[in-house]
Image 1 (spheres, rainbow, N blue to C red):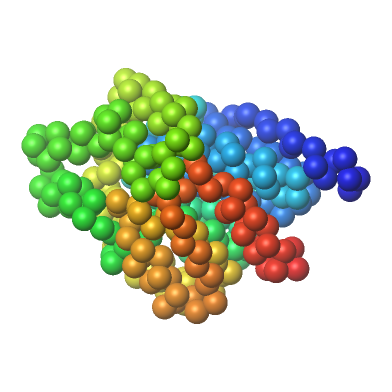
Image 2: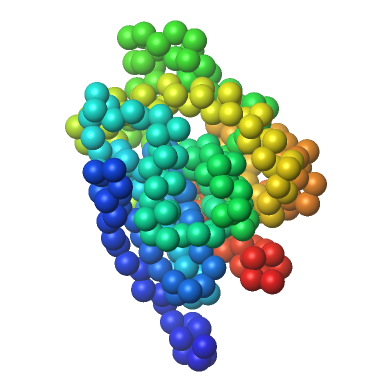
Length: 296
């Protein structure tokens, strides 16, 4: 590759792929014959959360970042017509990877991307070359007091517990998820929470997200299965963590080491959406890790 191409800003394409009658939006960049990185977003955002990371990786890797149904620019069917569960999201993204011919890929999993990605990995361990965990958990000790409202919903879904959970869908809460714990809030682009909130405010999306937040309890039942996958297959894992995350405790990051002794952990002075102010540092760690594992 020439010096000029090496440092040119990668071109990002914005595409859709039909999966089971739904249009799934995704961002794609990088040479398709390079190792693939599958970036799985969290709540309440979309592939938009990877807008800074993608160009930092795409000169050397094929990067694909889809939006789940009900998120970002993907179709958002009514919750009465579509099961908004993590099993179903994983089914859709699984079919998406197959439709795109992604036979091998490294996973980047943040927040909701954890239970979606870990389902893919445990279903198809032969496809996963590495896992990048960023503020996502597979152990109950990783769930902080920030999950108390969700736990009340899980215990008894009723008008009162749903109303309490809906407060997590407001602009105040969305903005707070981005700013809380940030070392320098002035570095956090307000486009991030504005874009996320625009998605949440679409008709029917609140109901879909409440269904997903209620179903989050299904992930806890899958934790032993995910942990067994980690122990048996020992996928290379790099963990980057914003230590001030109000939802996912640092104990959740450290717990991966019990199943994966070779996992690498890097803790940042940041919050839940670490990439908003640490994308360059995370990209450097990822590139060095990929050179030692996948590329090697």
